[in-house]
Image (cartoon, rainbow, N blue to C red):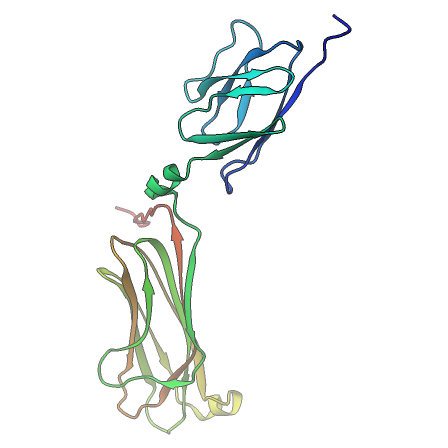
Amino acid sequence: MNPRARIPIIVFSLAASALLGATVILVGQDASPASVPVCIKGNGQVRVLIGSTAACDPSEQRTDWVIGGEVTGIAVGQGLIGSRQNGTVQLAIDPSVLQACTGCRGGRIFSGFNDGPVALPTGFPQEIARLELPAGNFAISAKMTVTNTFDGGFDDRSLCTLRAEADVDQAELVLPEDVNTVIMHPYNAAAGLTMQLVHHFSAPGSVILSCYEQDAQADLSYRDLKIVAIEGSSISNLFLGTQ
C-alpha cells in the first residue's frame, strides 16, 4: 500500500422519524475518488456491495455513491432525499412519500370522559356521550360504572349502545334492589358495563354512546365513563364462531 495514501471514512447518518435509524460507515481503500455500489432497503437501511459479482436483492434499490478524501457526490434512490456537510451525508424519507401513503397513518389515540355521577335517561335510548373522530381506522371501546339507588322497588335494567355509523355494540345489566346489598355497598348495587367495536371512517365522524333504564323511577346513574379510540393503519375483523 502506498504509505502516502489515506483511508477516507465517510459516515452516512440515516434519520426519518421512526422509519430510518441506521448509520452506515463506508471506508475507502484508495485516496482517489471511487464509486461505491450500495443497496437501499425499503426501511432506509443501506448495504454496501462487496465483490464484483455482488448484487442487490429484488426488494432493494441499487445506487452508486462516490467517495474519496470526502464525499464528492451522492445519488439517492426514489423516495429519499440527501444532503452533505463536512463529509456527513444526511438521508431522509421524502416528505411527499409519507403524505401520499394513506396506509402509513396510525398510532394516534382519541379519548373522552365523564366522571359523573349522572342519572341515566329513562324510557328510551338517549345519547349520553359523543366522541368526534377524523377519517381513519379505529378500535373503539367504552366503559362506565352503573349504580343503583335503593327505593324498595323492583330490580333495575339498563341498556347501552355504542355506535360508529353502521357498526354497533350493545351491553346491558340488571342491578338488584336488596336490603343486604344496601348494607354491603353505599350505592345499593354497582356494576361495570363495557362495549367495543372497530370501524373505518371514510370522512370525519362520531362515536355515539346511548343508554337508558327501563324503570321509570330513575334509580340508575353512571360514573367513570370513558370512550377511547385508537387509530390503526388497517382493520381485520373476523367471525370467531364455528360455521
